[in-house]
Structures are given as structure tokens and as C-alpha cells.
Length: 154
Image 1 (cartoon, rainbow, N blue to C red):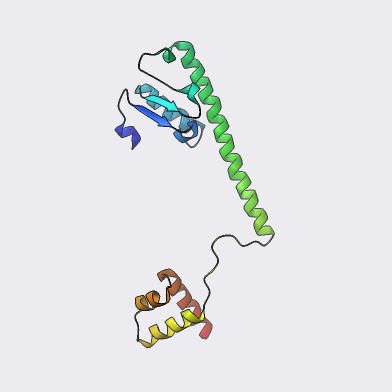
Image 2: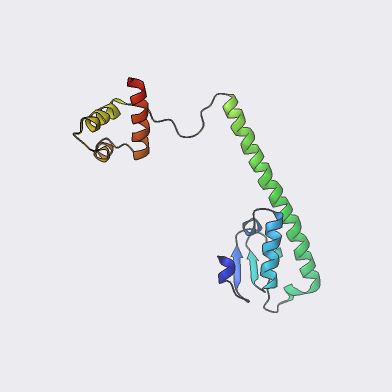
């Protein structure tokens, strides 16, 4: 979306280089796109790789080479960091499961409140939506519990 809106001479401000792409190749591709279209780029956390096409001294050949080298190095580090975080997260989840810890949302259980709602619904004295509203049960939970309850009473 941003690429469609941006014009030559516009300035885009990023919090960090990592916001430019998910991995090194994406980041470099995005950077080159904006460079080709002469879009000014400002990075709050990495101001030394800012790109400015307003004719200031930041666009000389040496500065440009330094920016590109720095961009490549920082992109590689950012990608490595993302991979490491993902791996650590997976290891933590695996360890938690191994230790028997339950992950995610706790399962919804059949309560006396649900049983009352179910009986009223099945007797026809209330609609399913009415039962859900009256007892504060979400739609998906209601039907899931109804299925479990029916299997239980069989």
C-alpha cells in the first residue's frame, strides 16, 4: 500500500531498519525500490543509514557505499535475531509441554449454568441465542459444550 502512495521526494520515517522487511533480502529489495524512486528514508534508531535526496551531502558516492554496506550488515543481523527469537520461543514451548504445563486458553467446561441453559434450550422455552445471552456463553462455546454434553448423557 505504501509503495502505491509514495512519490519521488517524499520522506518515510521508520522506527528501525527491521520495519522495512521480514528478512535481509526483503529489506534490501525495499531499500532499493525506494532508492530507485528517490524516496527519502529516515531511520530513528539507525540515523547513519538515512537516505536524503534533497541535494545534501549525504548522497555522495562514499556515503552511499557506507550506507549500503551498513544496511546489508544490519539487515543480516536483524534476520539472525528474528531466527534466534523464533528458535528460542519454540524451545521454550517444547520445554513447557515436556514439563506438562498447559499452553493457551483454558478449556471451557460444562458448568451447572450451562446445563440449565442447555435444558431450557432443548425444552423450547428459550432460543439458543437467548440461552447464550442469558447465561453469558459465547456461540462457539455453547455449541461445543452442547455437543460434549450430548455425548456425555448418551
